[in-house]
Image (cartoon, rainbow, N blue to C red; front, side, top):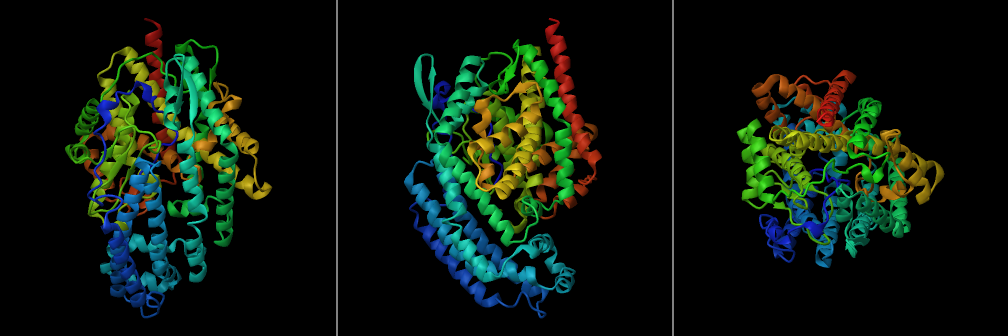
Length: 615
């Protein structure tokens, strides 16, 4: 599954021509015919039957001195086929729920699939545990056999967690209890945020908005409207603050318990292992981002001059430089993205075009639809799906390009098997962010001075949100998890102080995060379902900046190397993958090179401003 941009603002639905959007919905029939399709139950039954047979055949044979390469390969291939069946069912349940979280049938299906999935997982759990427990000398000898070549990375990455797994009986208890524990609280969060009504008066009329809609108003040119939207967001979150604070405390403590039981030394360790990155590399990237914070103030000082304000506040961050009534239809966005991708590569454009031609995108805005945007990979024998709310604004073109970048990455990775399909998080943002850059340069090439200034502002703010904001949120998460472990249950005020301190640090004195911003941590769903996920954004964006610089230097020679990166999927670690194009992820100079590209964007913006102000 691709990233969900939970903090990305969208436009209010009051400005949408809903009739244009009604047909822009995905067709999920490649998965199942509907939530009541009997094939869902049949597939679950078949998966359970195969899981039980798998357990009978292989239990006790993996952690064994007699293990052969052929036995291990046969086991992995069968496990992979069972996982394909499970993945299709799980993805379908998540997709229908995300498109309409308010439909009780969708929530019930997702819960049922999770519960049945847990029962299947319990049958298969022994394999992972035995693979981890197997003697290193046996595994190393078997990995020399060419028949296991395609699964060397899978085996290696599974064994990374060797020191952090519990005995099978205990793992089964944790897995089964998760449905009424952590997973239940994650669902409660999603449904609670979707249910909050944000009230605001617009043009003398009181309106009730959803979270994506009220966030959208933070991009409106009318400052008073932005200020009122910020107040509405704060009021809605604060009204539900007791529940949301309890959910956060519960899940952060749940992770602390899990980390203690699994013998993790620090809160980020499990995420770093999953990302196949060492602590020093992650800290190098985050430190590079934090050291770049002065760029943020440099940019916002210029923006303040363009807007003519004495001071900027949190609700001014995404203010457009100029008032624009221009709308971009979904069809226009499609043309812009495909043309931009096509300038880079016909293969990339053709892979993206499939999403439009075959209805793999759900772009219609609707009540109870999950906020943000994502691309779900599903399985290599099928195709990905994209969810977003297209609202006729220029930044929606960027969001579409971002998610189609994920989609192209998934499509090109389909030559891999399921266990080698999805990239590790740090490189999962590679194609999505690269796609944004292609569209940005295309739009700039066709724009006048005012439009260029506005495009650069939007681009820089997007880059800042991805590099610096995510680094600031990572620092916030570090404080949150350490604070919960040291101090016990935290109040919303304590969490808010941590939030303010870390987000304000990014802006220096250029933008003031007002008191009402203190509760805005409450709606960021990555903190809930994916602890420490956010640094992958910073990693990915800086990586793309450096790769884009490489593309500018090498031109057409870069394209086949880039496509090979995407085709590799998750078949090797980020370090090995990037090493193929000469990148050393441990080298601070490489990351500084990415930061230089960001500096270049800010410098270009300053030059455009000088030209604009001299008019």
